[in-house]
Length: 362
Image 1: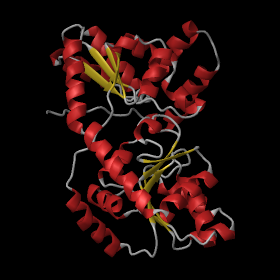
Image 2 (image 1 turned 45 degrees about the vertical axis):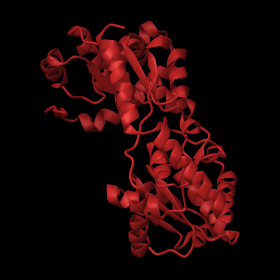
Image 3 (image 1 turned 90 degrees about the vertical axis):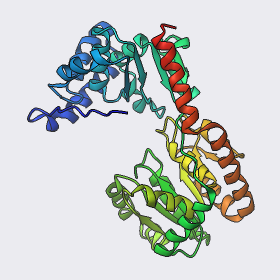
Image 4 (image 1 turned 135 degrees about the vertical axis):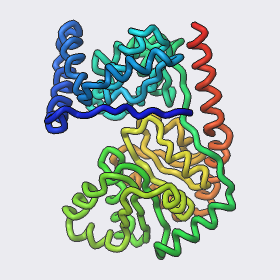
């Protein structure tokens, strides 16, 4: 594989107006104005999402040499629509993986503005990570036969490596009770705040639980914890560890050492970290939102709880803590599911079949 990074730059003072223009686009989408009015305005705004004046020139240089164009993540609609336009100009097949988040209505709006929907409808193939996401594209008017569900995958790793990784993590971070791992952005929408409150509730009830957070935006979580009442802060003292962004080795050590992974998020289209936990044979707890219920088989490989429900999340953690044999059964079932259905080899095979169909005109 050859990777080419485009030498594009922000014009001054673009970084400072980016957020304002992004909000303007979302506001315009919510106005309910006719598409004929919204479309040209949103397309104009999208040139600043992000503002890369040399992007069109770079695409016109590269796209003619390509067999097809594949664009990812429609929330960066400037890149997404520029790729679509370049594919159209040079008559190249166009494949999209929009990565649409299926959280609340406000989050969906980031992926359902009219100029984004136009791209979905015109694409030769849309790759969805879950059936729930695929149904959303069909609802937006994309031809169902052009929508393909291709989940992400993981690279299998020997189980014997897990024991060594777990020992290394526990030696570095000794804890005196069950360890819950959280991997992802440390934000409210990802469920990080809810997990902290659930951990406090358990510790106040005499069930000693530790939670280790790994991922970006840890300052927001730290600020949230600092604002909590004294009783909650006391319950979380020495029970919460915020690691920030970690490398791959530390991530796998944490997954190997933990007793369970909790990712009660409302914004995940899929949740690849759930697969990684399954690969380590760990039970997972997720929110019944977005594409997560397709990855977590409730009662079979893990547990599902309503998003933002502190009591339900605390109860799910308690159930796994108090029934370790059951937790191990869920984790092992999760590992078997991952190895059976969610490896990169399966993903690549499905992807290349789609490419072949698009290139042959089917």
